[in-house]
Length: 442
Image 1 (spheres, rainbow, N blue to C red):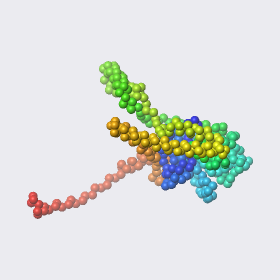
Image 2: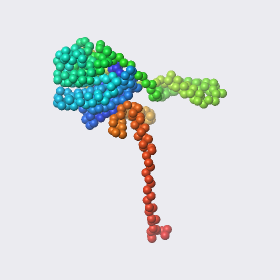
Image 3: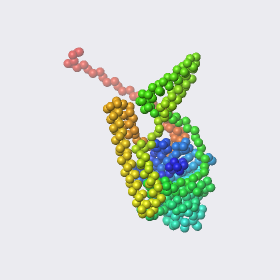
Image 4: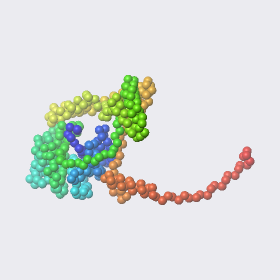
């Protein structure tokens, strides 16, 4: 995804249970909302690590709706991710979805830039353009269905425009969904924006990107939007991790010892008359850090360690085959390589686990290196526990903004510490036990 220069991605049909947030290995953050006890529906946002400081709050609404608010200039941004019911659901359920969506929109600050996106399971066609010029562009499907008309009605009522129908692109860059056999294509994923900010949309870069391949029947849809996000200075401390395993090499250890010893000797000679302990401590820390960085080097962040270069090459081939997926031969080739990738991915992960188990055995049995063994066990067993990003107020209202959450915690802790202490009840002391007649001390 890095080649597409993205900031925030909306995800539909995520199929994760409950709601919360979790971080990826690269530092991006995923907010999600799903059903409580079932892997069904599900929506979410993947926020790039560079703009995490602009997130004011994320509110899960249901398994079909989630909102996120970003701090920006001159107006803040509210993005709503939606996953509408498919054609197999009754019209009444579709109406319930739009009623809930309208309620969410009504609660959004009026000054915010509003963007709504997702899988709407609706077809808006070229035939709708003459009567809906204020809501959609002329570049979409051929025909409009009933769900498409319902989406247009909702958009017109709220002064929204379907952004990815405005630009003239070839058909493959308008389609957002492909049938499993590759014979049918539709545009059912849309990005809606307030008409007031329509001029900020880069129409040439607002389209689907079929080359972005993750083995899904949906294509990536991006909107390029010109806006300045406020940069918030983060006070978060980032610990530098050094490659300490290099010290196991005697030559490296001796070089580190000699180099650091020379620097410390120089510091002691220069600071013989310096009685300021803070200055000496700072200089000492700098000497250790510089020496360790130069000789040991920083520890490189790990991605999925079992993904081999051969697997990455297969993914590149699958991405190239996606262009010819529409033909029967291309579809068969794409399907075959997709199965190979999944199979080899499982095999590579299993081999990686087995190799690490052997390393644990060797570390304990032959090298007596318990530290290395525990590190490998930790790496094999670590799991990321999603955490909730919202709390409730006294009245049961869901709080999503950071300042309101902090105020609520302050209020809660203040009430907990100032609560009146419970009175200590005085119970009558038990009567002393009589000495037993047969006691030897009697």
